[in-house]
Each structure stands twice: as C-alpha cells, then as structure tokens.
Length: 399
Image 1 (spheres, rainbow, N blue to C red):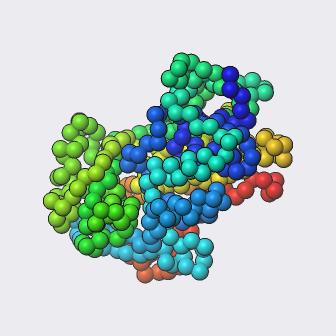
Image 2: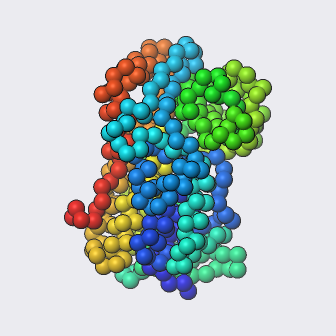
Image 3: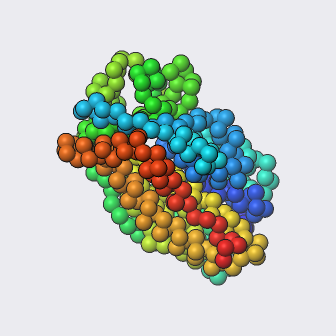
C-alpha cells in the first residue's frame, strides 16, 4: 500500500497543476491517471489573461508563454452578412499586468508542468493507473487502482479528483452530475491554413447556426502556423463520417479551402453539468470532474485553473496544520457558486450566439452588442474584466 499526503487522480492540466502547486508548497503527492501518457488530442488551448498570474505563481508562465502564443485581437464574423466586428485586449493595457491571452495546447502545458515536477522527488506520476473504488474514513482515503501489474491499493490523507468529465472518483462517490448534454457534436481540429493572409484575427468567432466556428491560432510553425478550428454538427450524423463531412465546412467558410491541411481532429459531446458539492469528506473535486461547460468561450479550463489556484493553497495549509479543514468547505462552496452563477450562464450565452444565431433579428441584436464593444472602451473593459470575477481570492489569511 502506498501512503501519501495527497493523491491526485487525473493528469490533465487541472490535476497536474494541482500536483505542482502542492509540490511547491512542500506536500508529497502521487498522481494517478488511467491513460498511457499525456493526451495530445485537440482540446482546450486558450488561457484567458486573468489566469496568467496564477500560472506565474506556479512558476510556469514564462515557459508557457515561450512555447505558446500571446494574442490580443478578437474578431466576430457574421457568416451570412459578411459583417466583421473587431476589438482587443489592448484596452486593458495599463490596467492589468498581462493584457493578452495565451494560446497553447493543453498537452503542451501538461508536459511543461511534468518537466517541472521532475525536480520534486516527493512527487510521483503513475500512468495506466485506473481508479476502481474509493473508500474513506476519518483518517484518510483508500483507492483501489487497476495497474499494469494488477490491482493495487493507495492511501492518502486527502484525494483530489481531477479526472475529467467521466470522473471515476465522482462516480465512486455516487455523486450525480446535474445538468444537460447539448444535442450537437463539437469537432475540434488542428489545421494549417493561411488565416492571417485572409484577414482572420488570431481569435475569430464565425457566427452562424450552420457554419459557426471558433478559430484560434496555436503557433507559428509550418508556414501559416497551426490553428484550432472548431465547429458543430448534428449528433444525428454518424461519428465515423466526421472526416468525410469536414471539407463541406471548409468550403462554406474559407476563401481557399483546398489550402487546408488537417493535422488532427477529435469529435466530442458538450455538456453543462455540475456536482451538488465539490467536497465529500476527504475527497475534493476540481475541474471537469466537478463541472463541465461547452468550450465556446474557453471558460471550461479557465474555471478549472481558478479551482486549482485556490485549492492547492488551501489544501497545503490544511496538510501543514496552518488551517483547519473548514477552508476546504469554503473552497467547495465558493467554486460551485462561481460556476453556477457565472461560468455556466456566460459559456451558454456564448455558444448560443456563435452556433445558434439563425434568426436575422437576433443576429442584428447580437451584432449591435458587439459593435458597442468595438466603439465603447469602457463597455469593452467591463466585458473583458468579467473573466477576473470568476477567480476566487485566497481563502488563507482572509479567514
């Protein structure tokens, strides 16, 4: 039996960054993940300006910025009318330390954090370790885990379940995942295409109820660079036909569709769900294990990172005896409130605007709001600062 201070289940960005934050605070950690290694499939890639300070506190911002792309510009394109509305994060210059977003595939961020964790001998990351059962008592939590060499038992004082939307930890706790699943399929693709030559901003939203898409530049490699192009299709169409249908979306939207090079792609379902509580005894849930949202506005990972920044500090204080465990109740209560009151409704509104605006009157209403942001600096600043409101301030010291 392994005995640790903290077990983190899930080696995605939320799990690995929880481990890094705890390691930097001197807490021994073991990370368990059912996958054979880092996932490089097209998933989250945009880190809003408001989370960059937290990455800096973890000591990985500079490396992440060097590997990724910093950007300020946004563009909304109404596919049917051709209207374009542009604005940018440059309006935040002089108001915040880092007035830009970071674009970097989540696999690259995980690998960067793993490299940092290699310098901490009190941290282990174990792949192909799938949690099968969770048992807890007043002193700790025992996990039964399927490994390549058979079933093993791990025990720790605390467990963080950060194992994604299909969380085995959440299931083992018997917690419901309340909410709904969208009746569409997202298709996230990494492609090479000269978007810049055709006037696309580095983050462009194509507004349309059929050909809506989110376009974001990931890096400058391979001539035109690598871009994320994510669109929606009906789940009534078979998933095994995604690749065959993909060119139709490119032909409808892109000026020179024959120039598209598809590097990789991944279809997945979208959800708006949350658990009734983020703490169950000595088990804490974070990221997609606790709450999931559609990724249209990049708020899923944003919420998970804000969970991470406040949870690692609070749990480290509990482990070291500097705070009692009521601070973890505060974490659970506050992070759920933020999701329900802010992240969920904002992400839902963004998805509806981009992918469900088919009525001409509704399109004009949406465009009018965007035009105001482009012409009214104060309104734009208020909109851009809204992401910061999704952060939970430190729970240590304020109590």
